[in-house]
Length: 367
Image 1 (cartoon, rainbow, N blue to C red):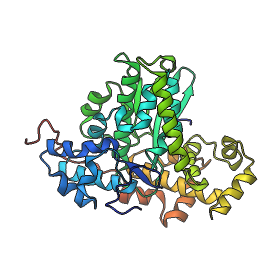
Image 2 (spheres, rainbow, N blue to C red; image 1 turned 90 degrees about the vertical axis):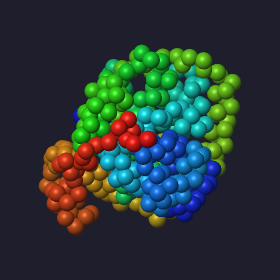
Image 3 (cartoon, rainbow, N blue to C red; image 1 turned 180 degrees about the vertical axis):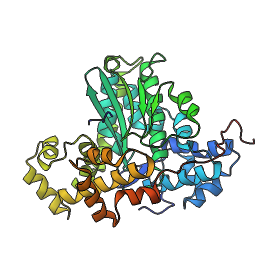
Image 4 (cartoon, rainbow, N blue to C red; image 1 turned 135 degrees about the vertical axis):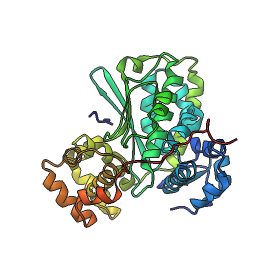
C-alpha cells in the first residue's frame, strides 16, 4: 500500500476557520441541494445533526468539524446512499476552497498549486489535513482526518477525494486522469458510482485516502494563471495566517497523522520538520500542557479506530501501519487505550457486511 508523505455552538457563523476543530462550509453547501435530489428535507436532516440549516446556505460560514461528520451520518441514514459524501464532493470546485482555491487557480504550475494547498488548507479545514508525496514517477495527493472522534470519516474521505479529482481536472485540463484512487473504507455496494466520479481504478480498505497520478503533471503550467491575482490571494492568505496562528499542539496533531503512517514518527524527526531541536519542541509542548508521546498515542488510537471501523485491513497490517514491529505490541497498546483488544473492537464497531440496501441515487429518487 502506498502512503502519502507530507466545540463551537451549533449556530456559530464566524467567517473564518481560524478556531480549532472547525471547517468552512465550502463544498458542504451542496448537502442541501443533494438531499433535495434524493427527495429528503434538508432542514430536517441538518437539524437532526444539531445545526441550523441556514449555515449551509453560505460557503463562508464555519461549523465544528465533528458536526460535519454528524450531518453526513444523518444524510446517509435518510437517503440510504452509502456514498453520499462522494456525491457531495463530486460537486466541489476550486471556489469551494475560497481564497485558497483562488491561489491554486493562479499558481504557475500544478506543483506550485498543490504545495500551496498543503501549506494553507488549515485556514479552511481544522479537522483534516492534505498530504503530498513523490515516489519516483508517482505522486500521491492524500487527505487524512485528524480530529478525534469524528463520525463518518469514510464519507469525509470520499468527499475530499472527489474534490481533489475535480481540482486536478481544473488545473490540468480534461486529459488528466488518476492512475488509481485509494480509500480507507470498505467498498460501497455501488462501485459504479466511484468509477463515474474518478474514471479510474479504486482500491478500498486502504490505510489512507489519496489520488495517485504521474509526476509529470506537477510541471504542467496552469492555463490563464494571472501573477497579479496570485499576489492578491497571497497577501490575503498572509493576513489570515497572521490572524489565526496555530498552537504547537494543534500543529503537531496535523503532522503526526502523516508521520505515523510513514513510520517516521520520532520526536527528533518531527522536530526537524520545523527546523527545531527535539528539546525545543518538547518545551513548546510542555508550555501548552501537552507531551509528544501522549499526542502520538492519541493519534495512533484515532487512526487505529478509523482503520478498524471503516476497513477490513488485517490486524497485522494495521499494526505495521501504526509503526509496531509486532501485532502483540499493537494489541497491548489498543487494550490500554480502549479497554478491549482490537479484534473485539472491530467485531463491535467494524464495517457491516451488507451496508445500506437497497442503495438509492438522486437519479432514482423521487423529484
